[in-house]
Image 1 (spheres, rainbow, N blue to C red):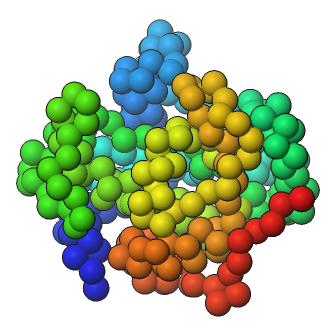
Image 2 (image 1 turned 90 degrees about the vertical axis):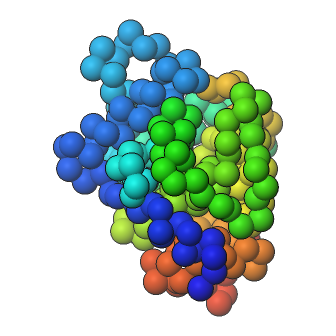
Length: 255
């Protein structure tokens, strides 16, 4: 059992947003990140300080809880296929249609009921800082890192890996085998440090800032993590208990 795994579970826990109160906590984090900290959405459009959209009707969410402070510094959403009409476009298909078309990406070989979108991957700077004060965390392989504003970033790997573990759990519970996502290029590079690789699907687009449309097979992503960063794989899959490692996993080929 790795030091990364032990440190994560000493300080954090994943919490499914499966009650009204927890769902509202997730919406408040989204408001904090998308409306206040990043200004991607208009604050005045959400007078209750909870950011929501039409995709929440067929989505699941996971919160990450800091055990010491009780704060939720981050959350992530998985947009599931529309149960009424699985062919309804997911957000990336709707807003990045031109980029996907230009790349020649074809999703028709993936069963629609198995395809979901990783969405609203949110880590609040304010709540992360409150959590990091009690106690400070030492991250394996990370020095005392600071972002451009001088904020300690050593907590980010634990929070990001915990949220990614939440994505895998939600996918396993909902029989999802493939992901779409639109991520910042810098965040994709950050994920690659932990063996997490998505396949780019066309050029960077202007969608909540500069974003890279991407697609991935769950089996291929988890196999890559196991190969490159087994300590991260331990957290994300709980030693394969959440999603067993596929011996026949291979990179998905799109045509």
